[in-house]
Image (cartoon, rainbow, N blue to C red; front, side, top):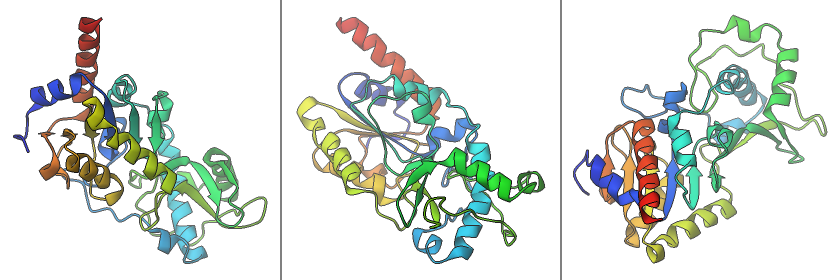
Length: 280
């Protein structure tokens, strides 16, 4: 691994040639959405898939908290980092985020690895509906709930820190009365195989084109993202990681940059535009 803080060398590496970009929660902190593992972040334990499907009690806890957290998350605006990523011309942008901010700026070639919090799926009939429609049903079934809990702390997945959820009413699927779940990959749940295969294919094509894998705002703590870094390093593809704090991929990185993603990605966008202009 090259020395930490090699911002200019990392910019040079990414300024030309194909890119595959992997983004994490650190990219959205400048939009007011907290991350899980950034420097100074408290320990956050999201609900696992196994807990969610264990019964109505767990689902009540999840939806009561999500009702509050999502109402805040959906008001978040994309930041300069999202805009920069959308303008990089990457062959594939893999995001581990479920907040929809990449979608909001119409990022080309985007793959939401863990799904989107804006979608809801019935666990019985598998019908998919919008989170906005469910939010209206939640508000109607729980009048005044949001006003009574305005001071609870939000989490990056649309959850909040709240323990007392016993009186929250959870609507069921309007088609089959089955339980509803956000259409995102929970901890303990597997990413759909076609998504994983598409990501691997994009990473595996990089050596033939002299491309780079760029990781922005991810601690790579979970294997769903780290596996692509491992694959890139194994095949000799340069890996650039931009993240405040250590990551599980640091030893695999060609360059590790301790910097804010908004500023560094904006600088990279400008560098790629200059390089493209000089080559034309």
